[in-house]
Length: 324
Image (cartoon, rainbow, N blue to C red; front, side, top):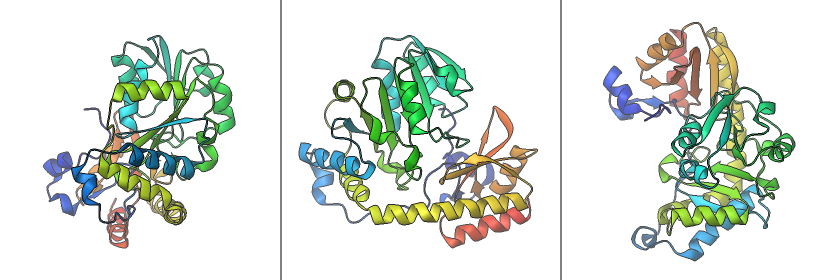
């Protein structure tokens, strides 16, 4: 498996402790999740109903203001769509705006595409398929929706991964997916803090949605995911409060990092990326205090941290920073 963070079992092997003793900041998953209510018994025992799936799609469409003309499909996490997108078109030349989430290039290569990493948005033009993660993981760089919409006219198929866009609605293409060569991916688990639910969405033209639905077959997500997702997406008050809290917490973590001599590279409201002389040493220092973070093999000075959740977690992180 390629490294994505979240491998707490590996952390406990290296540094000891029980799973419950660790604060996992190696991913961009919200540490204060949406409060899941009691799940109805039929969500566990019955095959998911079409009407329930339609309700989930409607909730997502309303939450992100997706036009009725745009197709929408719930999948088992954005990763499920990433695996299938290479099959939507005949393999050709693909370009990925990098560095970024490593599964995009891997899925394309496995699907027979010739994949090239590029460093600027402009060099994506002319590709048969182009990938942009917006905001980007791990550095948080953003591109305006208008610029990306123009780019869609210059490539065969543009895939925009908005897995971390819930707090950056002004950059989202969700309201603009009305052309046949644009696909937008959305994640549920990160912002709502429920990655284990395995729920994501594809926004695309109706023909592409039909193709993806055919590849997935019946029941692409569980009854539990449908019920949780429908209720959570409708809870806009929680989303508004959470965006505000995450913005404040991102600034709070930046201040701690600055006091430790780290420099901010970028990030989102769910994770921050810092540079320092020796990221491996900083990661090990935090890990000895059972705080798990994410380093990168291609950049020895980068360390990415998610945001602590409760005040108890913040206290432990602040204490760990004092001895870095």
